[in-house]
Image 1 (cartoon, each protein chain N blue to C red):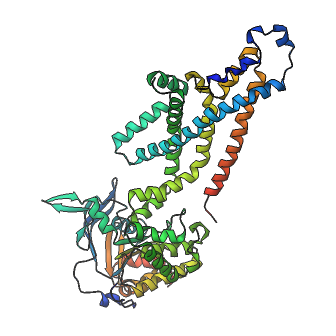
Image 2: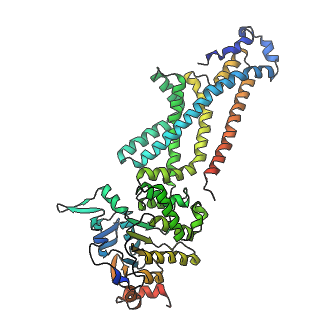
Image 3: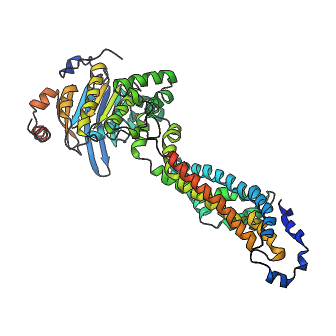
Length: 240
Length: 275
């Protein structure tokens, strides 16, 4: 979809690159960096960010569903869910991307990417939720029994809110981790930011600017997100 | 609620005529693995009766309350609430579990106050109190809120409705827990060592509230406590437990001053000290 980013080629005819020129060119070329920035930012917004945000939402919801299912399903079924999750967690993300891409050929790369990232990280997040659920004191469950609260109400009003409180930092870290894994999308030909950076650098072998920029853009997005998570964590702590 | 009962300790006189007992234990056995906690336990509690269970720790007193609240499953025997089987019933000569629905319906008549309060820390005091009346009993929200404020006034915490439990002292949290249990209008109130986790100076305020509840309602109470003065004041009957058995039971003035059983004498001698 973002194949047109090969526009980098229109600086000059790339086949005419003079080797001397490459060797003698400055280590850092501001003009080239500014030239590359818009396409990279576009890829960042349209691909990296979309996959991360939608993927995180899927992972956060599906992870919670998996954790709850493992608690409420009868033994054999809970076991099936557990091992499906284990299987996904214990196999490489890249392999899952390639497998899904070539198995579901009618789906576009973005969709595959979002599904694979979402499901893969859901299995990690389910473990975080599981620990959070187990950290809810037994007395809380007993109080819900003493008040005859329904199972649904118990989960919604008592267990999940208390479990979430301790899970926010870990879930946030997995979201950032997913964000940093987005360059793997290259294996299914989705032009996320780093792929685009490579494409821009390729004709002239100038990779310094584009990859430094890519790193800075990742940092500029990750760091505020980490700050946001720690603020959210504080807000979720009980009011005093 | 029916008329208030006599607050005096000689309360046995005010207990209504024996109809169906509110609680009946029939041949109850409770084992944890191979450890037999309760064996062949039989007793009844009448409507409006306040019964205190005393005895050394590990004698199974708390287990009895937890069995009534369905927090533990009994290994054998039957428990009846208002004559209806709570966990198992006899059908065609076999002991079969009752339906979850029936159990839940009986359970809404029972309230419990825990040693560790167990308030929901993610909700305000008011939310703690109105949650179950609205979502379990289906009461209108406005009515539940009005009743909650009423109960908070009774426990002396009118100004804490919007506070979070973690900002309250232990004594205050336990008073909220009492209000939360009473908000369900229980027929049976189970008090499980409700002052054991409290600082000594706030034990009195919690017990005074429970004394007032005993005086002004006729909710049936099953009490486990180490506060013998409180037990003597509010109970109609005291049951002494040891080794999973009822050693002896009787009105508090008898048990506390002139117990028949040697084991009771020894226990009371130890807990009452010089008194």
